[in-house]
Length: 114
Length: 112
Image (tube, rainbow over all chains, first blue to last red; front, side, top):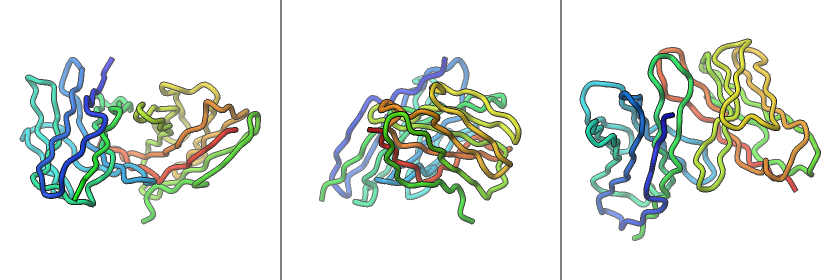
């Protein structure tokens, strides 16, 4: 069965510092990969997605993620964090081939300090 | 476009009471989903509907029923609420040609 691991439950960074959130997946083939962000009291918003092609994908709000097949990872990065980036971030994978299911990681809560 | 809307935003129930959570999308999406979100557990799929007229169980369907009323609307019903169903419930929809899902703002449900 597919699974998604976000090893960091909570991360604190200073405003202006760089950020990397880790995501590892377990699946026999390359799935579709996503990062979502959830601000407090809100639903999830798609940041970026990877289906195929260039392994470095750009998303909204200045985020990017890199797919590394050899490490089964899809880490999210941002060069300079803003206070408004404080939120919870979810990595997700979807099976190929038309099946409907998306599996979400347990989330990483980001705190940004001045 | 409103995207995905959910009602109500908040609800408190007593054990044994019933209620229906409503979800609607205006993006002409075929697929719709209900998730629950609990601390430290991410999102877990309760039920989904691949298209109008079809529904299927997800990971945690016990205690819930769903209705795909039409292409726009997908409701979730708790027939006899239990404290274990205290959670935040999210509805989502997905278009035909992509795998990303679009989420509603959520319903925070407390069962006492």
